[in-house]
Length: 91
Image 1 (tube, rainbow, N blue to C red):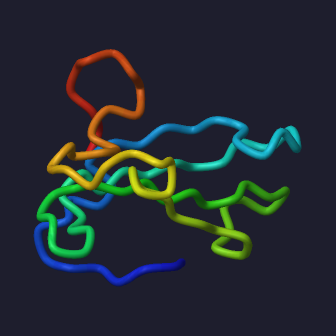
Image 2 (image 1 turned 45 degrees about the vertical axis):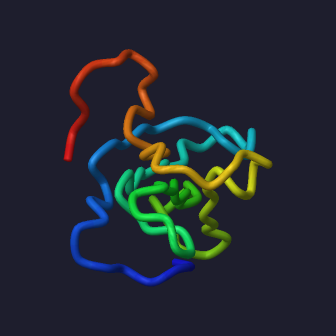
Image 3 (image 1 turned 135 degrees about the horizontal axis):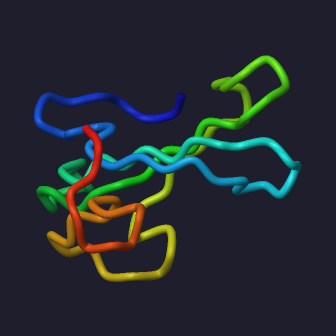
């Protein structure tokens, strides 16, 4: 998987299964809302692990954060609520 794990990122604090790449297999999106981005603490990021017939695989995995989406780098805790229900998440 891309990226570097740091203490306090809370990787997996929010998770969701969905078919991100539209291949008919469930992919895993895992949020790390306290991932640091450059000099900004807790900007947040989301990682995706691709679903395969044998299960999840790190092959083809990717990560993205607010900067990748053209948003300003702020302490937004991107990836905090992947279910988009404003409720608690698994993690």
